[in-house]
Length: 469
Image (cartoon, rainbow, N blue to C red):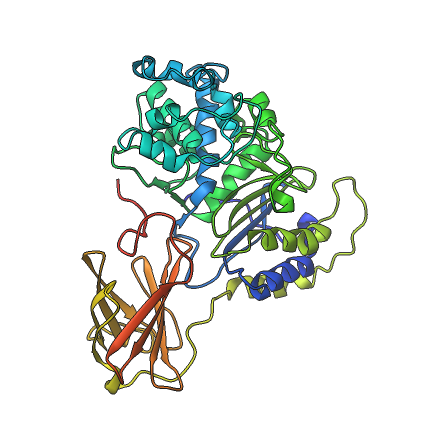
């Protein structure tokens, strides 16, 4: 990752470190919230950043629907280059489908409607579109008639964004990542962005992007700077205005920060605007404060994350109008030390001993499960003294297991301990994603069971990692 923002201190940037610490307290103590990383920028400088071990600054993280904001940037760049017209019909990009798509509303869907999640459908169409054409999602989407006139209603709809990615690919003749590389990624210093592809080889667009937290912060900073980076205009100013303002109302959304309106693959919020993805991937932009907040995590309660930001972080930022805020520069050092030592607790309990080694039978999902001392202990014998091997989804998964620490091997980190009954409790983190799984091995019965802490939305244990080219 080559994106490096100048480092500063919270107080030098008009931020009270005590408020940042209170925000971290909230993230670490709120039920159903688990933070993995934070990057806080003000005036284009780092006020605070940190990663909860075993997550790390140089690792990518699956962004889920925050991927949509990167897809939208590709559309914005294509509009600037004259490759895409926001007012063109979607069908005009796919003339081979003209005879198939007979519904008049489908034929009237425009590119701007896709960007605003306003295709005229009242609800998600992914399953219906896949059923309509299992091999061509764009065709399946256009064969799924809208319920209302395009542009009139909001519905969060994955095929809208998939189709946007397909339009960029069709107009540019390149993959989405190849198109973005010289136009967005390289200028912003992002040298690692990978995208999950479907069976046709096309990037999902609506999900599946893997990128470091600094890349998320850089995208937010680009929009905060109204499309300009190091003196180079990447996105037109009118694009930024449209993307970050309400294009369609969404008052029926359940949570307060999800019913403030929707722009071009960005949500409006009670403060500023944001891109976000399942389980707590956030790119929050606060233009009034000149702030970008990038977060990753494994959080089921995403509204609680934003609530904590508004309650603790926002009041700690000195207003741009020069109003006085009582800062405590001495708190900067304490916050810096805390950020440098962030970590998620390993599994707590007794140490593993020889009697727990052996094979375990499971519920049919996990096969060939075996726990044994690790012959290759490396330099950290405490963290790498055991190895767990399991057949899952038709493939072999083998990883080191730490005791009192996380043993990290490739895209996995694991920790284990014995409980009062002698069973072995294991947590396995797929550290390039939000997800973790919990296993229980019972030496008394020779059986094992497992469950996801959060259920992956696509992929499984063998594919929960950065996609290869």
